[in-house]
Image (cartoon, rainbow, N blue to C red; front, side, top):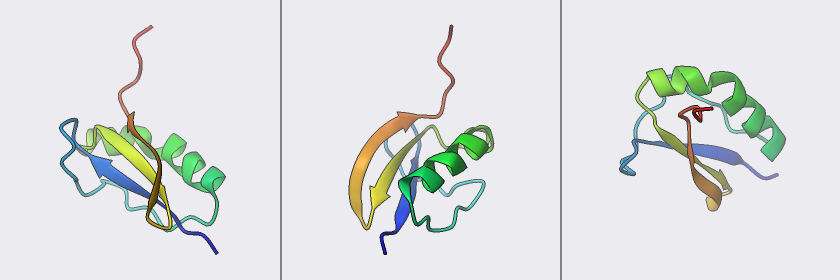
Length: 70
């Protein structure tokens, strides 16, 4: 079974510990739902961007946690 995980970084790419610690997710949808629920807490905790991995292989990122200005 695949394990989906997030890497949390500052804007310069330095890895940071997340303010809310995620579990390992079994689907990409579960991982993305989690980030959708907790991104504000993660941002307030010092993470600026995230990368999504499946079993250690980067799927995408960096994805900014900063809300886009309208």
